[in-house]
Structures are given as C-alpha cells and as structure tokens.
Length: 518
Image 1 (cartoon, one colour):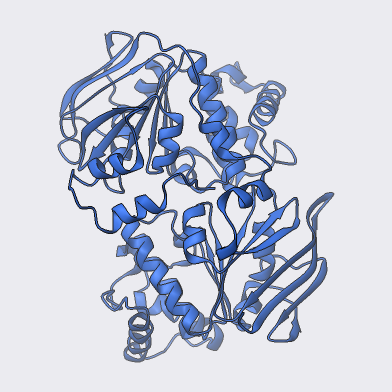
Image 2 (spheres, rainbow, N blue to C red; image 1 turned 180 degrees about the vertical axis):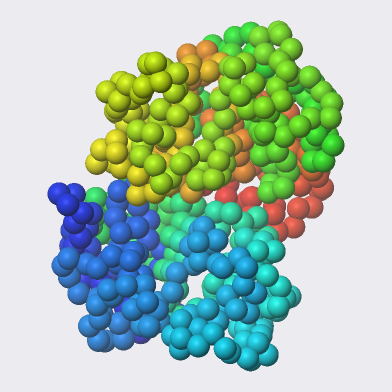
C-alpha cells in the first residue's frame, strides 16, 4: 500500500432540501488508481466536484499530504495540484489557441502575463507531451484540429507541467476507440509510477478492473464499500451498487415478432456507407454493432434524413419513404435518439419541461399559445415512467446526470408513438441503473409492436438486448447473426474485417467476455 495522499472524511453536501452527500469517505494513495463507482444519484459526481473545487463541502474534512485544506474554487484546487480530465474535453480546451498555449494556459492565468515567449511555451509543452509519449502532437497547431484522444493528452500534459499531485479522470474512455483507450491506460500507468494519485470514474466495469488498484462503491450519498480490485469480482461490485445484476435485464425474453416494418436496399451515401441492405420487423430489436469508425452513426443519421443518399431505397410498411430531412423521417414514423445527446438531442440549458415538449409543440399549442399545464403534465409523466431523478420539471438539463439526460432524450419521442425507433449508443456514458431502465423501455417498445434499431459498440449489451445482430465494417454490413449464433468473439472477428488474428482487439474481447459496463 502506498503512502496516503488524500483523505476525505465525513463529507456532507446539501442542495436546498436535497442531501447529495452524507458522511461520505474517500482515500487516495500516492501512485494509486482508485475508481469510484455508483448509480445515478449515488453522489460520486458531487464528491468529485468538491474535490475539484466546483462545490464547497458543507461538512467534513479534506486532508492533502497530511494538511487540512478547503477547496473554494477550481483555481484553489489547481493550486493544490488537483486537476481534472473530463469526458467532454472541449469544455476545458480553447479551440483557437495552439496546443502549446492550451498546455500552459493556467500559467498565463497565474502570472497574468500574456506576453510569454512562444519558444518557451512550445519547448515546455513539448517536454510534457514527450513525457506522455505523445510527442507526435504538434504543439504549434490549433487545438481545434485535434482528435478527442489528443485533446485528452493536452489536458494531462497541462496537469503535468503544473506538477499535479492528483488527476481525476471522469469517463475518459467514453469517446475513445479501443486503441486510444489502451494508450490512455499506458499513460495512467506512467503517472502511477511518478507517484501521481489518479481518481478514475467509469461506467465500464472491464476497464475499471483492468486499470484500478482499489474500487470504492457509493450509494445514496455515502460509502458502501471499498474493495482491493485484485480481490473483488464484478458481481460483488454490481450488487453493492444496485442490489441486482444488469444481466437479469439481458436474459432472452419470449415475444412475438411481426411482419416486416423497415426495408432498406442498396443504401449508399457516396462517402462512408456502401450498398447497405437490412430489414426490421414489428416487435423486433435489431442490433447494429461495429468498432469505432465502422459507420454505425452514419447509418442512423442517413436513415433519419440527416445526410443525403446517393442511392438506395427505404420502405416503411411496404411503402417507399422519401426521406431527405429529419422532418420527413418523423412524419414517416421514425424517431432517433442520437449518440451526441448534448449536441443533437437536447437543449441542455433549457428545462426538462421544454425539452420533453419540443417534438410535440402542436400537441401543446392552442392558437399560438402554449398550454403550460398540459406541457407540465406530460413532463411529469416522462419523469414517472422513466424514473428520472430531478427536483422538478423546471430544472435545466445541464444539472441532470448523463443517465437522466439520456432518459429525457428518449422520453420526449415516446409520445409521438413512432413505428420505428433508432437508438444510437443509448447507454454511452450512463450508469448501470440508467441502463436497466433504458433496456426495460426498449423491451416495452418491442413488446408493443414497435421496431427498434440498436446501434452500439458495447457488444455484450447488443447481444443481450437484440433479436438479431448486424455487424458493420468499413461502411458495410458484413455479417448477420441470430441471437443464438452471436458471441463477442465472432462479432469482433467480423467487425475487424474478418481477419483470423485480431491482436489486441481480440485480447480485449476475450477479457470482456461475460462482463458488463456500468
């Protein structure tokens, strides 16, 4: 066991009448990766925001290197050597500044001097990237041109140049490919060797067990248990979080599959998609699975009229549908829950009520005036049906967790009573509790005769929820598998181009066998 670096003791936090944390505890050693897990509302986000200076604690003590500290702001946290690498890296990157300027950004803020030698900036920034084995990133290019993985490296480099003692990784692999994730794991291992304490937040159990030394589970604002990762198993952790395993929701269910609802023939967009054909029946859930870059999101958007097609036909209930715009798709009976919910599916600065009613404005408008009572009643129904955790319908979505935001993104389309639902990575970045609710909803839609296309890179989940699996590679559907035929190894084989040897991707697939992400 390493030397104690951080201790958070009896931490309490309230927001009005709501208790977010009550007697919460957390410890971190030097050179340790300590994961924090919990369902929506467990308190992990609030605890991390207290540690990073976003919120002050109401009760309790924080000790760093043996001294009591109080973190009144993010600036105060950084001065203590506490840095965050968020899932949505763009919120911490200034796109129009260079890579070097972004890495040294806090130096400018500390010294209040914008006139710093560019040569010195670039030299120091390059040294930090070299330390992370990310020296291929050009320190003179604009940050706007970087990939998400490169932006993460910039944020980690920023922490290193300021001698960070603690780095908080908040869902760091959610937007990354398998190879990018493996590179990040290598960087975290390097940070451990340097004595940096790493706090790791993730909904993916396999990677938590791969990268962490200890796991702390939180529930209802307090500590449930801390495990040595080497001595814990997934079932124990899930039971501590939820009291029920996600696998229960992924067991095969007997339900009737009806006549053909969607027929797609020879679909191409002239760019990514190439001669795609597929069908979906009423009451059927069809999984579309592939690695990052396979074309899953492009297919979802093309079906929904988000991108123009160069060839192919789309039929709904036997009739050719001319879909050139999302409005055409909605009119034809489709609903899309997009992958990038914060950019494409929601108005996060607006209230839950506004978001829920947006696709249904005609329903709530009478002679150009909105029926606010009916709008609120509808929002209340969504909250109850999908178990959305919020104080009231006027709460801006930006204050809800990722899982609850996703439930709003799904719930707002339900009242349209669409025939076909397209779910693009619906469980991305949401915890096990929200996943259970989302899977239940998809099953209910299928049982009610709706067709569902489930686009996902989470192979285990797709196998569990789907009646059939379509595997994509390089913009094409390369294999169709029944639920009985589908295994993670077979899907990974076809998803990587049908190669016999998959190298690291196959190894990762084997590690993830019979595992879940949370």
